[in-house]
Image (tube, rainbow, N blue to C red):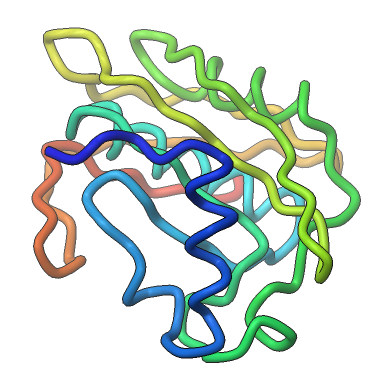
Length: 165
């Protein structure tokens, strides 16, 4: 397993997006996600935190379209979010609770959110259903199920389905 990339390493990798799309830069410890909005992206962050924790750790970079070549079009940045809400949402949306590092990475095209996930505890995160904090006023319910990722080269023991409750 490769080391979890540092913010500097991620910034360096982003220089290659003019030649290749971001999804070709992904690894077992790095994933790029487009920014949808704070609520939808937080739900995706919880899902990815579970996956990376069960697989040995990793970092998710929000604000990058992973299927587009060219920095100007691929790096969209993130807006209208609160880092403390993200930390709390990921912590409360996982069982056992998972503490992650959520930080910003400023690039010329926009500010990205980095969710750095440590290797999770053993046994792996378990099935549960719990409301997640939602800055929009509605609650999201997380339902963990055993499964396998459909991403090439990745096999995770826990999947996540988020739905409005």
